[in-house]
Image 1: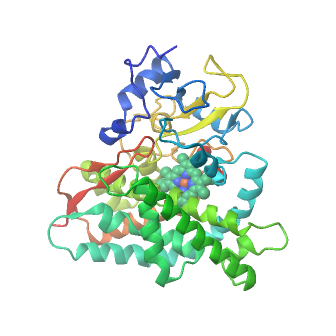
Image 2 (image 1 turned 90 degrees about the vertical axis):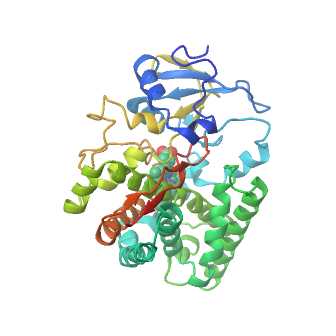
Length: 411
Ligand code: HEM
């Protein structure tokens, strides 16, 4: 039952597709003609009956799936990737220990604990330090003469510092945490000389580091977030291993996503000079949300049907994989006026860039919005004349809409 609205062999999870472009024309065609559509894939992982997935492209359907975890489980891996012989069963099993891949009631328990670290008060407490960091990052880049890479010089640093501040990684350990985080997320791109083994080793290092932090705080409680998560006596707490996997999740979920939002945002501003002028003049508080809608750094996630059900008039069978294409939902004309225009004053903006509103809705949304606001305010103050100095080089990935390099210059 291949989808008649797509060319033969077309697969949204082909990493070479996002490497070159976001498939917006194909999404538009599916939303119109076949909003829930079966996409066959070439190779199936042993144990899966069907190599393929349902592509869900309309805003309303993506929200429906996201808000019904009893019908659509996160247990069987949420990253929508090509299942083939390279994906090992044990790798998928290990991912079950990550919040993103848990179902209720386990998800509810862990989420209630880790939420303590993301209260408005906790995020506000970081604002002053992150503002100073944002200014320092931009000042450092401004001092450069000639073209430079916006990703490594500007977009990378603040998301890493924000996570380190949040969990209180001491200054002297930050370089190694940053190095592990970067190695972990770069291995899916063959242009980087980082292998899957190095990625896995780095993940192990991060988990071990965080477990040590947790063990330390259990022995010697301090006034910090780690203590709140692992040593609270009243409402339950995280075990050291759970804390290890939580920090691993932050290093993945909070790092590359925000980096790509900042990079795409800069590219969007520089290719829409009217919006950049407006932003510099008025600093609209709505800009960060529009950047996330426009960029949709997480292009898609997936769920697995827990029982036979129906979606968009299609019969979904128990065990079928269902792809939530946020990148499509965020351009749905049923919800957004003029969805393909970049408008930093867009309001309301009910985009699904942080998820479809269910129990897994992005835990770090307020932090991400704060980081995006802080960095663009700093750039508008110190580098208002920034220019593009070349084309962006995109990440090769099945589900992250990423930019690896963006040449810019201040002159
Ligand atoms: C979950 C996007 C920044 C931590 C998610 C989800 C998306 C997302 C799409 C899944 C939602 C779902 O399945 O319904 C983004 C984007 C970001 C960003 C686009 C930046 C622009 C951050 C930051 C952090 C973070 C800064 C933390 C430091 C998490 C966590 C989850 C999550 C822990 C899992 C929540 C759960 O399973 O309960 N994010 N995120 N994210 N995000 Fe973010």
